[in-house]
Amino acid sequence: MSLTMNRRQRAEVVIPQTWLSRMRDQATKAGGRMSPVAETARDLASHRIEDARVWAAPKLDQAAQSVEEQIAPIVSAFLAELARRIDVGSTRRTRRRWPVVALLGGVAIGAVGVAMYRNNAQRWTETMRESMRHTGSDASKWVGDKAGEAGEKADKAADEISGKMP
Image (cartoon, rainbow, N blue to C red; front, side):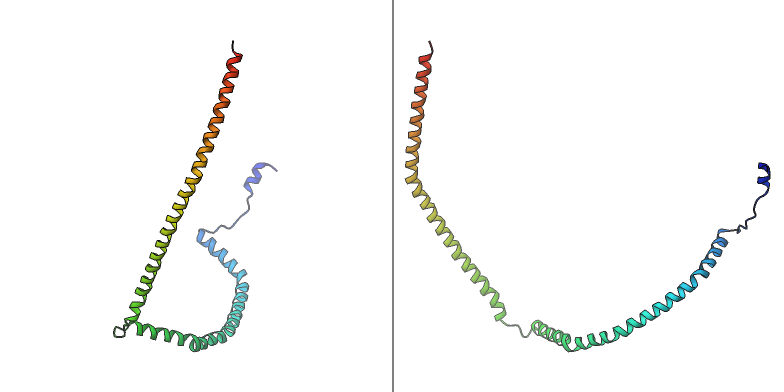
């Protein structure tokens, strides 16, 4: 066989005219394959939804009764108390006094604390001054002694050095 013969014999392939027809053909084939799977999924989802509804109905009923018996009275009492507090005619003077009394008590305790702090700081300062007076004279004496010893050592070293030099 020659190469030219291969070129002349070509297989015929049916090519749709447009992309739309190609996609339509592929979608039809895929739909035929997926139809049984979709039906099975639909049936399974239907059963699961029914099971969820059977389980959820008593839970919702129990929650409704719990809200009605436990939470609703608390909310009602809270709203009634809030309405009583907001009402203009029932404003009490004692409620206004309590924060003022607490604030003044705090200020008084703070003032006492500041006075005690200053007193202790003054005592500490005086104690430190006294200890420095006693210790300061001892320290200056010790420094003077050390300075004298250092001076004597320096004089000896200078004499030795001057004696060695011609």
